[in-house]
Length: 254
Image (cartoon, rainbow, N blue to C red; front, top):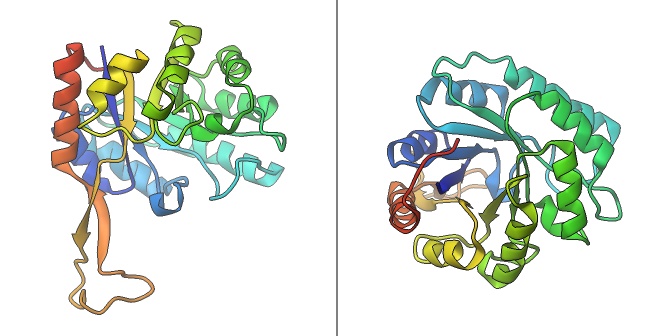
């Protein structure tokens, strides 16, 4: 059973990801800045649109580091509570993506515990803040103890394949206690190699491509409209899903 998760900040991309056979989306805002929490209206719209696909919502109060003060942490807790209370007419799986570190780069256990508690029984992913921790084995054990369901990681490297051995080690350490979600440089052309070399059963990618601005004055770029924007590519989603299903017999795990 191998799952494909598409990272996106465009609502139309959710429909594309569902139609093309992806298992989950990570719903974000401002991916050009690394991703932050989408608006509650965006999450509400996604829940209205989805009929099958799982929705993991990024909970990241601001860009930059992952060391948060009390006001920022409480804002993230409040976001989780508000989004969990939204109508979910399709009954799709709603989960959250979190990540909090201490100033020394280790997992902030107390803050993570608060966020996990706010999530309740829904799936929780610890995002790529994990790649910054000094001891991946220690951090993995802490996340298991905290009840986190999966970790999005490239084992500290820029791409998954640059640290394929490290990823394989994490898969071994994780066993069936926590999922290892491979993210970083995953593309249709290399996803088969990623699966074979690391042993992961979940992959994550941003399947974007640039399209021209829809504005009538698209030829005149401004500070707010560069003339193009990134959206989710049906072709990329389809290609990676086909590659994964062909390699690992498919399956869906939202």
